[in-house]
Length: 242
Image (cartoon, rainbow, N blue to C red; front, side):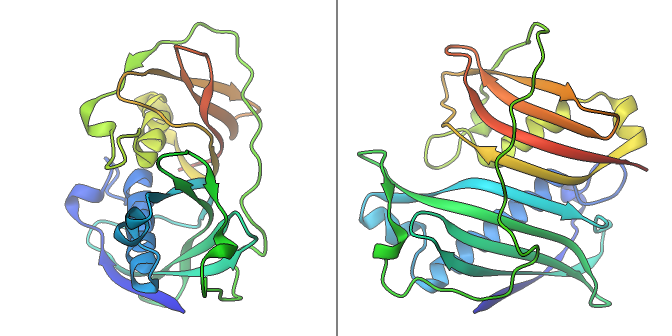
């Protein structure tokens, strides 16, 4: 019931400090999730036959340390079953010494591409379940940031659109990380983040990042759409000093 990939931190996956970037860490989780779903018979092509697709709804990631440039590690994932609507999936990054260095839990929905309605997962035959849980809880609800400062909106870029013609989930993480300046990143790195993915971003949108600093290390962020002022995602970030 577990699916594992042996991975290596490539040069084009690292940030300026020589560590696996937070966004590429997410892309690796996204990729192995799609790969495992395909093996289990619930992959992109299979769902597309019924005009359905997976969307990530919630994600909680805790990082003990980041893999270094050239480091070999194992990424494992498994399905924790469904409550009827959400499909739950956990992830574990394991170094060559067998230590867990990154763990995550995620909550997914299946959407009908024509009606935009949620498809009940308990209608899926033999939906897989494995009892192990990295946190013994699911990703939770994140509060909206409060900030009255004027936002700087920019157009969605070509490379930010995914195969479903929506704003790519991982690009939200990049937008948030890029909203912090170089001096901040020199002194801090993300130790934990929790994200709620709420609405679809489209190629015609203009987006901005809103932030609220609860204290030096705990921040709330959202990606806001200019046309209606809606939060497309909400994120809780925990930073630690480098």
